[in-house]
Length: 311
Image 1: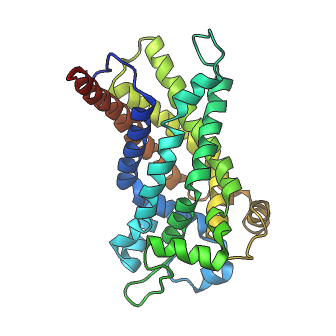
Image 2: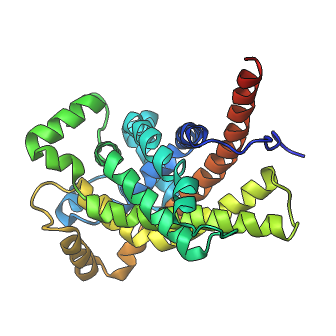
Image 3: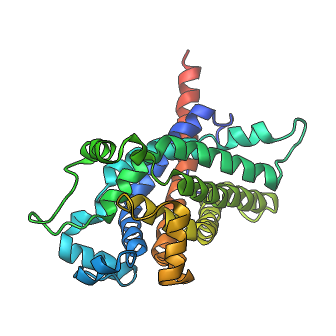
C-alpha cells in the first residue's frame, strides 16, 4: 500500500478547497517551464513581421527551453510564476475543490451514482466559475510568459506582477484584465470536463472492477488518462485563447476573428501548435496535482479528526 490511507470520514468541502489549491500550486512549480514553452510555441507565427525580425526560433519542446535559456537566461522559464501561483490558488480551488459538491447538487435525489451528463455539467460549471474569478491572473501570466527579454538591456514591459495588473488596467481598461474570457471559459470548461470527468470515471472503474486499490497507482493511472483527454480536446481553444490574450489592442476584433486569421494564414494545423508541450505539461501536471490532492485530502482530514478528538 502506497501513501496515506483514506480517512474514516469523507473530506469536507473546505478540505477539498484548500487541498486542491495547494496541490495545483505544487504541480505548477514543477511543470511551469513546460507551460512557458507551450505558450512560446503557440504564439510563434502569429505576427510574420515580428517573426522575421526575431532571432530566436523555437523548434520542439526541448529546443524551445534550450533557446530560452541561451538567449534569455534560466529565469525566463519561470517568468509569470507569481501570477501562475495566484491563478492556481483561486482557480484550482474552485474548479477542482468544488467539483464533488456541484456534482452532488446536480445528481437527482435517491440516485446512487452520478451520470456522465451530470459529471460533465458539474465540470463545466466549476470550470466557468473558476475562470470568471481568476481571469486577471491568467492574462498577466500569459503576458509574462510570452514576452521576450534578453538580459539587462532587454525590453521588459512590466517590472513585476502587481505592476502588470496596474499597467494593463491603465492602458487597456479594467476590461483588459478579463480579455479573452469567453475563449478561456470555453477552454477551461472543456479542460475541466476532460480532467475531472475522465479522472472520476477511470478511478471509479478501476475500483469497481478491483483492478487497483484507492492508492497511488490508481491515482497515477487515472490522472495520466485525464491529462491526455484534456489536452486532446482543449488544444485548439487553448491556442486561440493564448494568442488573443497576448495580442495588443486592435490585432484581433474577437476570439472568432483570431480563429479565422489562424486558419487563413497558417492552416488548421495551427490549432495544435505546441501540442507536445501541452501534453507533457498537462499530463505531468495532472499526475502531480491529483496524486498530491488525494494525499493532502487524507492528511488534512487526519489533522481535522485529531483536532476534533482532542476536544
